[in-house]
Amino acid sequence: MTFALRGERVLLRDWRDEDIPAWAAMNADPEVRRYFPGVLTAEQASGEAERIRAHGAREGFTFWALEIPGVTDFAGFVGLLRTSFEAHFTPCVEIGWRLATPCWGKGYATEAARLALDHGFKTLGLEEIVALTTLTNLPSQAVMQRLGMSRREEDDFDHPRLAVDHPLRRHLLYRLPRADWLAGQKA
Image (spheres, rainbow, N blue to C red):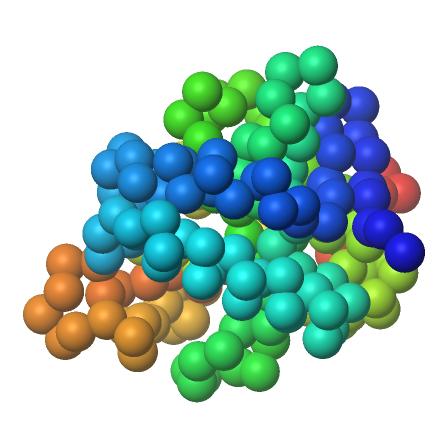
């Protein structure tokens, strides 16, 4: 069975093998990876894609491939993932996105994220979905705010997978409870 969530301009779908070259190119772009520790080699990107796909097979949801019909077959990913590290807010499901630079600033991440949130709350029955990012990633923070997610300073944390002195270690946590999402849908 194939998975698909369709929006007005976006399609979230299962990954295909033919997505991997575009995924690798995207993750070799320093601009795409500027809020991450570094760019990925083609082998590292392929490994990450396999982990994302395996999560989907195991959990029934994942960071799905993002297609912009009529524009590009593969624009990156948007979706839901069980966070795999320990922190004060785990276990949890996080929403995330990563898009190729030509697809930035067009509202695709927000539109696709709304589809993923709706699926997470209405179909999967999740009680809360979180998002996390670095202090300096203002574009992602803006998407989180447009989605109705909220941040409390006491939830900010040091990412356990980054070195103590790493400049990207400090992260912000945004939360969205199911009740808030459903109330916002009725408004």
